[in-house]
Image (cartoon, rainbow, N blue to C red; front, top):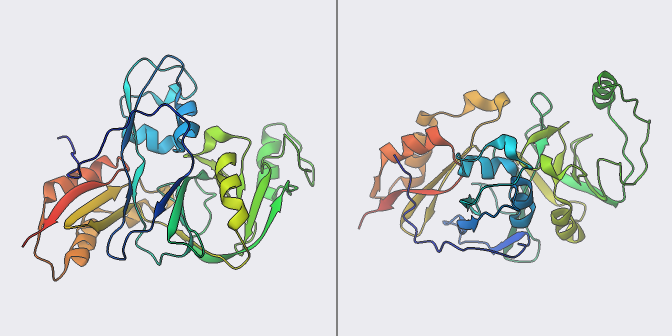
Length: 303
């Protein structure tokens, strides 16, 4: 079964570097932002290059293009059309501050004083090292930060034969990169990274990693007190006009028992209560199983 979006989208064949995605915030009862795009791969392309060119995480490219071999992350591609998952449903949360959706490996930033939302791919904690689900605030930000390795990071590196310093000064080997944003969740940061290939992967010890170009764009408007919501929303459902859309992501291992088809059905019933709506439940079941990380139309308001 193929999933087809009911939204008429223009397939854009892009050739230039894409900036971080910023959109006008949809009305309160709407959530769809962006458009699906396509890229004609050349022999010079790699998944790693496409990640930074189009500001997409590894997980998103992998799920949207099951024909690709993830092992070829840094190897040249053969000529083919690559689907770029650059359309999203906003998380069903209060639209303010920063929302980090862990299973999606994506962050949403509602820019203060504007009606704009910026969205960025992120890297998150490896299994067993996930940042806790929490409501927090930004406490400070630092350029060219020093890094103080935590005991578990120090222990892990010792198993690799690496003895870390107590404090690593700013520089090309500092894993925080040139930007660090601190939160009221102790020891967990939002920061740039010297490992851009980790964006869209479970690779950190809990911190939220960003492409350097993204956090450079994001950093100037960040101030202490901005709220941060760290959430687990592997499935999102929302209206777009008279149509119901659904987006499904693979759950994190730590939360895999918190998502299921019955829970998704309940969410759709909640969204469409008091609405005469026709839902394609076969499509819902397929999207729940497929988890391709892209919005798909699954229903329409009647009358």
